[in-house]
Length: 161
Image (cartoon, rainbow, N blue to C red; front, side, top):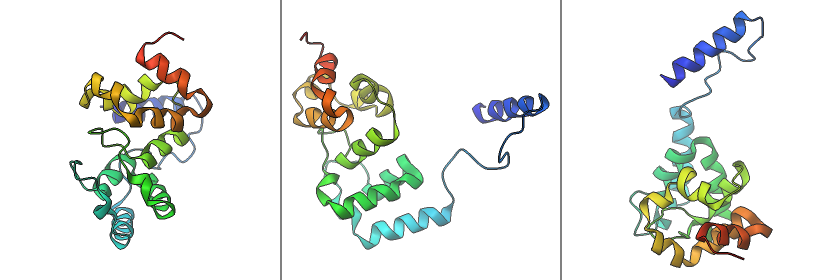
């Protein structure tokens, strides 16, 4: 339905005399099978799935492709630079350091709650008290907010300065 609405809006815009650049390009959905196969080949060649945390519900290759599509190639490159970036930062959250780095680069996250609740759904799968005690929560804040990490963490935990 949402895709149909998008197509209808584009048609109305064209009727108003506004040209839609690259109107025939597919702007939604997963990239094609050829790109997925290339990603899986690269992941296999670097033995990515062997780096999957035992607590994870699926192999890293599948998760990265499902979540990030073509952007997952950047995760492979980052892992080639530093394998430690596949560590899960928050137990049971299934988000690696390199995934949080990707979110910091490509999304405009201004509040930790936005990342934890809406963009990652971490808050929906990890109990609040476990999140508050998680040592990786501070590191995630450092990655997402650089200089403002302490303030964002305090805001999220509901503490006053």
